[in-house]
Image (tube, rainbow, N blue to C red; front, side):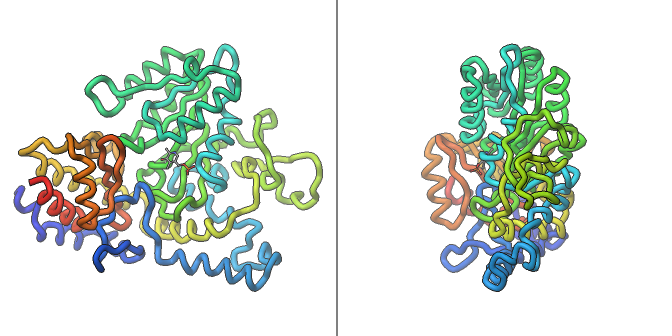
Length: 423
Ligand SMILES: *Cc1c(COP(=O)(O)O)cnc(C)c1O
């Protein structure tokens, strides 16, 4: 059995049976020595959908042909270009269309959302975060705390893995939520941790945090397009994500935001406002008073950056075609296969170990490989062999088998290279 699983015949069968295997052909792969590289970095920058160019050219053509009139005359009028995203993203995030808006970059959006949902008072000013959060999230939270005049040392509660462990126990998060209960203003965690690949139980953490009266926000940068989500039903207050990781929409492309319906149409919510959040029917009346759109669009400041949105559309069309549930099914199989492969390779030596949770429900399409010495050397050798992965100091190689375009064969090929390098 073992031998069979690690054979070319096995992966060929798995790929032949994979209903999504065709999607790979919709993406451009970087080349290495004239052949496709083995791409396992889709959690850093997703590959380019081949349809992205035509979508972008459409907007360039419409700009050339119509100038300013493109706002209304373009094939997809720019004035409400952003509205095209609410439904397809709603399927990915598990939200009603009116709970979604695309705008800005991710960190910008985290700040805008914290303006509304981190409202500390002297009694309730603390923020609970996961340790080793993405640095930008740490800077954002830290600066928000200082902006309100509080001391990050006292205000920020970091929950860490226990000694000798690599992932955070959910019971420890919940215990801290209860311990700081009355003082907790916000719980803000990455849905899937970028470093370990741990997928938190968003539903139960959200529930516990709301029970003690805190607001709850999620950074879904590594979760959106990776795992199926139900942000509306799970009753998170807000979430934000970028579109260039699993969502394949291009470097620095537009971010997305979720604001739960219960916060729409509120007049007493502090918010930084701009004309694109103002009542659409009266937008061009340029009146002094702001009438917020009664949806997540109230948080929108500016008119749509259509070029980055054009590539985002190309990418989301493919998600709609594949379906997030089918992608998740394949993802679990791919990640399991990679895990077995890595275990097999490291069985008789102590070169590395996987620190991502073993439970398939608690991880997405990523395995983080903790190397025991010479990690960077191993990573560089992989790169030289045409494997594009991701190195995180001091000693972790992140590998993302992305169900949209990676195959079982990719994992087999990676395994053969890795086996050769460690022996
Ligand atoms: C990728 C990522 C970011 C990047 O932020 P940008 O504002 O898009 O540069 C932030 N937070 C997390 C958790 C990420 O994974």
